[in-house]
Image (tube, rainbow, N blue to C red):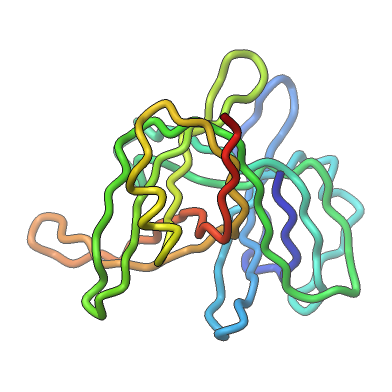
Length: 194
């Protein structure tokens, strides 16, 4: 379950057609308390967007599901993360970024430290959806949450509450630095489902 409130970060553009429906993608910009802006990719059915006259300064609420797609085209990110919109509406509320995931740890946790000495633990969570599909969602825990998560084994079922964050980084390709964007769920809390 995802609930986001933010402003339009990019104009909706055609993405693909599936099951006789056209889907469009756009970015929703959500400001953190720190002032940093997360630009989250939203995928929506054309019917949800028709009739909405979206402008840059209006707040939009998106409710839906966090999804992943394994891009095999060789262009762009290999693991594409986006929010599949189930509901889009205007709101008077301001920035909100909330996600709840229930899934299974599908890779060993990777505990590391930042240059400033803070603990970080990278997790990969498999979240099942209908029709036998699963989404593989990168998550990141900090501090005490990171230490706890580092003790878990593959196969552990957990509930995560957090927010979706976008993070820019430089990747060297053919000797040239190219700016990329990574998406992950920043963990606020865990709940054991076992």
